[in-house]
View 1 (cartoon, rainbow over the protein chains, first blue to last red):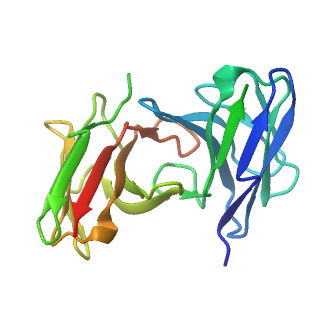
View 2 (view 1 turned 135 degrees about the horizontal axis):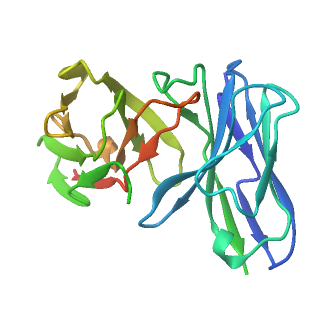
Length: 114
Length: 113
């Protein structure tokens, strides 16, 4: 049972380049999330999904887009990367969405934008 | 500012000692969760405590919640070197259709062998 898997683990982009981060979960969870983690800022929610085909904005959605075409996958896209998007990105999933269900996290993608 | 704020920011102890970390929050919550993050890894869920609960145990972990003071504490007893990690509290305030958690900035725990 792999849980939540993120690819890639590391990536370096130049300003203006685009990329997609992939998250896959094998726990049949309905809810999926993308967070970013920055020093001194804790984890901040970028986008989330309450089920296949749905997406919604979190706290810091600007500059990112997401898609949930399949229940087990949640993609995070950066259309035109900026240095401010240098961060560690975490995907998470949960069985239920009312906050009573623990989040299961992937091991993160470390992104550097130069 | 973050809903949950951990204290202290860093804690250094010897193996076998107890470690206590505190979390304060500002608004009413439905539940509070504690997570552990080892260096270079994702967060791992430890304990969830609901607003109507005062204390929960899981192995060497003990979590208390005082809603009147808007605070929670995580106690790790008989610490081990493997407990070295960052610990985060996360609060759920309800009123949303998804599991929106607000994370604090974490306490870095170092346990020396």
